[in-house]
Length: 261
Image: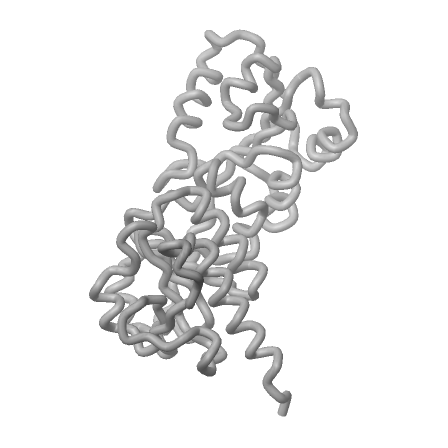
């Protein structure tokens, strides 16, 4: 395995450039911390490159990760250099460089799923992905204008949810409407029913939209299921991550309460 201690090393400079664009379309992603790296090994196998703090690599949790990666794919960095690649204030001493999966979108869309329409805040996208995984959703489509699903902040918010989901970035949601074999559902204040006052289908495509503008008008018009989440007027609106959690778990509650035939 290779060790780097100088900031002038050409490979380190290349890593710095990669870190600036990590997770964007066509770029490798950086997984930070023991938990995300363990999750990658369990779901996808070896990373393209595993980077360790040279002074902490003997710690049990790091030693276990090191043992799982071929030596040719390991890089030991001086702690000062590793901190320049990390995005958190106190890192755990390990980064994985990985190639994000790019699953094919099925010809027909007939399973429960979530569509994100220009959700720009990485924290919101990460939260929604985590909610999807917890609610049993396994496919998420992200339109252009969403925060990059494999960016460091979204990965931190997802807390490993990425590895339970098929993620489709830069999806043309308007075109995907034609491929739907299940209802399209939106949250809106116009011509909508109370989320808790109507039966929800066992499978639908939920659309959650831009933090300020909501779901695009064309997608709203295409929706056959329109619901609102009534709340106290002390607040103007709900955070999109909160709205997604309420909708998905109300659908899950109803599904679990139906009699089993």
